Image (cartoon, rainbow, N blue to C red):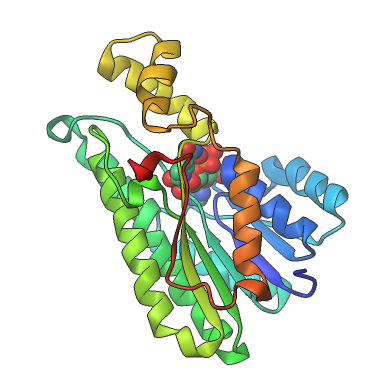
Length: 260
Ligand code: NAD
């Protein structure tokens, strides 16, 4: 379905990003992986994914908390593949704390990664997409892009902002064959959630198994984690020609969370 297309998935060494990268590669795209660790440390992952999918897979180290690194990541992907057709902004972080106890440096880091990096990569990717008259931008926001949770004010703010950014970009490029959508998963069991379980256990003074049942999945009516592969399959659909009219949309994959 995506043969001949080139893709960059930010933060794709684990969790949702890795699942999206795998699914895009299986659909035939060349995929650039990205993470903050050195290329040598990610080589087994890169080579394994290439062998598994038969697709051309690259890896570029970039700390997306820095604007210049985010821009360079896009430039290096274009240099490696000759173009960038599909941009999946996935890299993100969480820090759970009450607003009045939230460390300033964690606010800065979270906004830089979850929001500003989406601006910088999109800005760098759009000229090439416009020149070719085809592009797909998929922003991995969150159910926290449309609803809120206590102790997650900066994360909620960043994801609401990503949803708004996605809509505005979609409108700007609507006549140029480029779509931009926000994917909003509910809780997906990834290393990011494993850390939250530990953090929430401290905030609520509860054992971790109770936190999963009574805090994390309390919001998700299915009482099950969303699978990363479900998010990945949706992302592949958004990148297909069948989804060419789906733009500026907010796609909830949240087990019914936001229906309440
Ligand atoms: P994860 O921790 O498994 O993966 C995060 C990825 O981001 C990793 O590949 C990591 O290397 C990368 N990363 C972290 N900091 C980086 C930096 N400074 N520069 C470059 N890469 C960096 O997390 P995940 O749960 O798979 O989350 C992926 C995205 O999905 C995030 O944007 C997150 O907010 C969002 N999300 C997650 C869930 C969930 O329940 N897991 C739900 C909704 C949305």
